Length: 113
Length: 111
Image 1 (cartoon, rainbow over the protein chains, first blue to last red):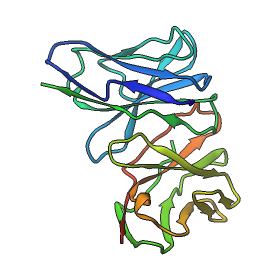
Image 2 (image 1 turned 135 degrees about the vertical axis):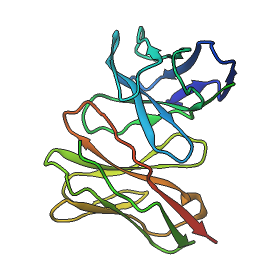
Image 3 (image 1 turned 180 degrees about the vertical axis):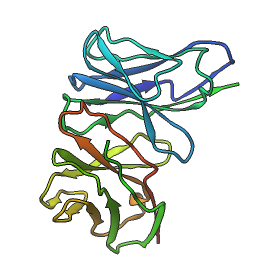
């Protein structure tokens, strides 16, 4: 089955710790994205990558970092510099840039206390 | 970037048609109109998209106004599984997939 996997589904961390969220896709898509969603809100773009070894900041990149060493993988690190890290994090991919649809993973709910 | 306006919530009865409106008065000529929906605690799911002409697929229909300043997502027979938040999004053809998700419309389907 082709798709996007995110792990874990729920993640708990203490304040001040960095945490890395996993995102893997086997759709052979070039572009990948990370979004953050707060309760009752829409999605906000954190980072996106159009090709391996290249990525761009989205609207709320501060306190986050990413890497794109493989086409299939786009991990997101939530650093201790992120002021309000508790949120629902969604990863997505698309065949290429342009008007193509994005395919979303099931999300990771991160709680930092 | 062009933005969209949607009602916060709508209600429908099961097996009746639902018309979800979206206003996008600042749409540009190269903006595609996309609709996604999100079930609770899941990632959004693509529903349909279009540019100028009305579009149909197995999930829904998209009716686009002649001036393209508004569009309507039509679910022909709502089911309980259609209860979700529906997002109307404008995507510029050459803007590298920068999707702007607003708050969307929460659709409640009554049995």
